[in-house]
Length: 184
Image (cartoon, rainbow, N blue to C red; front, side):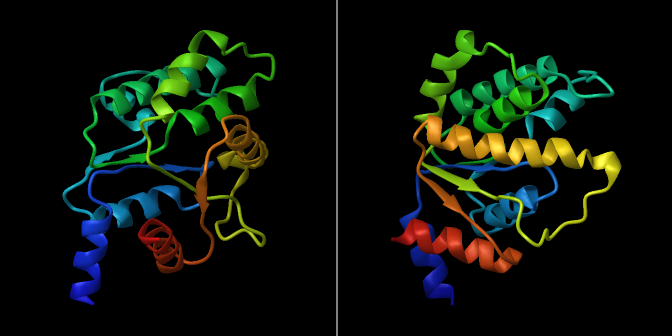
């Protein structure tokens, strides 16, 4: 096992890995577990939490502007990161949230920034909502928004022509899927 881990770590040296997905799918748990296996990597938590720690006050009901602010912060995270980084969210899923709450949103002003930033990401890991759903989503967790964002992320993956690792199953199964895909 130790030899396998060392070989795996050697194989993924110098990568930027972005975990994307809607809320309540296990995205953060996977990102944190991946970081445990790659302790030399920088871990960038969700822009929402970083901005909140810096004193930013988000709306009670999320707005497109809230998500655009997080998207801009996500772009900054990518720019300031080194080649060994794990991102718990990226501009793609934040754009999906903004579009889900405002389908008339004009994001042309930041399109090139998004396009340039995502070119810096080496691996995209998409954690979709599974059927049956693995995580209970109460009404306070905005299940309709969650479902809409999941669909918009799929569309954006196609629109931006991203190659993604789509993971399913338990945490260990998801981690193995990421490891296996990166190895090969």
